Amino acid sequence: MKSAVIVFPGSNCDRDLAVAIEKITGTAPTMVWHGDRDFADVDFIGIPGGFSYGDYLRSGAIATRSPVMAEVGRRAAAGVKVFGVCNGFQILTEAGLLPGALMRNAGLKFICKDLYLKVETNKTAFTNAYTTDEVIRIPVAHHDGNYFADDATLDALEANGQVAFRYCDRNGNVDDAANPNGSQRNIAGITNAAGNVLGMMPHPERMIERALGGDDGRRLFESVLNTLETA
Image (cartoon, rainbow, N blue to C red; front, side, top):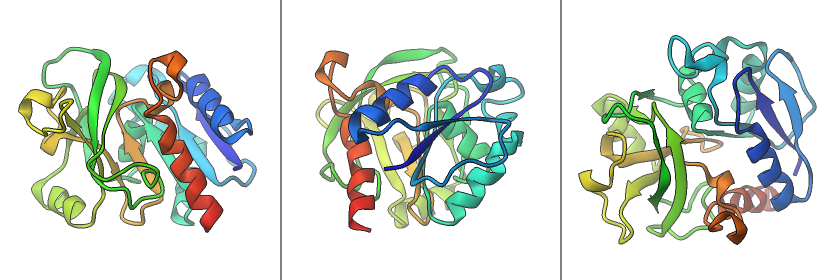
């Protein structure tokens, strides 16, 4: 799998994402600076977590103006798989590649801990190695992870199977007690309508092997490999 990781000023999880991709696919990704207007053809683009531009204005807002994002948008429209994690999710919503917005956590505090997610569907390019309704454990580290969209958008996401992950408890219960940040309908990750763009707040790249505390995040990247191999 040929891949690229986009690096913005303030990114601090680009190496985490690059290491995960190389360990799982066997090939190191190309690291692409945000000021580049073009880069080599790839099958997968990763937009990492961190604090691009120091989260000034809104998290991810300035990053969308970086020259590279026009090219990311063009390739997403052409069907290239794009994955945005944490700040990457915020960038994808700010760029209009995913619907909705990420707001300040309801508790107004930074959250950094392992949480449980329910896999809502395994019929996407990013979740086919999981089982629908499977409960997985993935870490979060964010201050602005409160997913918001209007009711019509939320209903469309549900109807189209675009909700990939929801916050839940260890038993798979999706309720307010399991919601860490106030996200509507406990949404932790969504895809675009075409299914080739995924944004999520939790960090699967930090949970790819037992030495890191667990490997529940590994199958997200393996799902992309599965999709590309059967294309």
